[in-house]
Length: 352
Image (tube, rainbow, N blue to C red; front, side, top):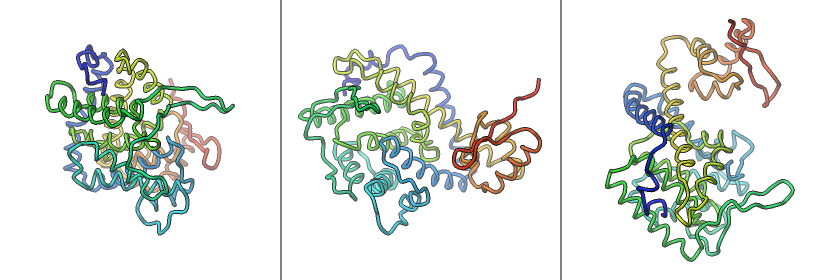
């Protein structure tokens, strides 16, 4: 809530790199409709994959893991007839919360919506969801040796509902005023909500689910097709560092939100890049083998996994990917490194 008290302070002098990333985001948003009209089958496949990746990655950030991938997918798709563990129960709850936001008319944003999402998240567990914390909490780092370091002190339990209501009111009024970039406003809302830390458990997952809905409401719908949660998980150290840097001084309104906002806008820009890369690949006139070859040689990182190719080229089978990799191996363009789940492929340096 406090970030919205003085927006001239919070959002003054937008840093150059953030301006550039916002331009990339707005450019991606402008081109997104073209892909939506021309590639509906691809978008259906991307949405399915993004849903699985979002629940899996967001849960993993909180240590909630279903190790068997096939089992995790069955739960997310609603095909599991029973839920065997607490993690499986929370996976099912996460799915319900996500489906509510993208399958129902959740508006308007209000306190009741946050409580409902939290209730959905824990509906399959014995933990009572749908209520704010009833005791003060801390956000801490736990070291392997058992030591604990406090990262920040959230809002006291007795003031949580007041802060949440104020945050929602101020955010809603600011969005309606239309004087600031909507992506920056969503980023500030996320920063404040995470800093208030309104729940005993499930804060990160509720906030990340809601983030997708708020961006979608502002017209930035890429989170339906590319998992923002997966991008966050891929840069988890930067995610936590940015949050930590921008919470220093939050209670006294002396914090610098740009550490977090730069990270947040950067994630969204990368999501649009990944979306366009996948859409462009699907529009390629070449064969599936040609598309794999082009992706590996022109777009894949220096060290990559088959899963990276699979994610970038939905609709291309693993046998096709492996066939092309073997051909590239024979040509001396890539080489395998490691075996099993840890196996990666390494691209050969470009001559000259």
